Length: 120
Image (cartoon, one colour):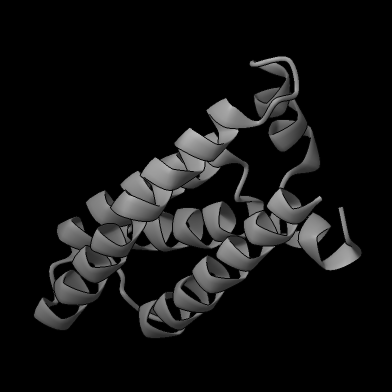
């Protein structure tokens, strides 16, 4: 993995997922594809809940995004979504807009990192 990819993806998690099918990568590809289908909706849910001031909605959507990000090894995105979830669970949305911007950026970076991994 490239150094920047190492910051975005958890190399051990990705390696473990690759090993599940003997290193062929089909399982990881299917898992990442499902992640790509679900994540945009979760990001939209976070944004809508944030606009509505729905702290619980933000927490639920951030929790779902954090969990699915952890499942595919999207380390940086998981960390930001988890921070947002913790803040919302504490009853505050202070800094949430900035975290949402970071989530959107990290999602794109995650997609690029997986695309680069696929090329190898």
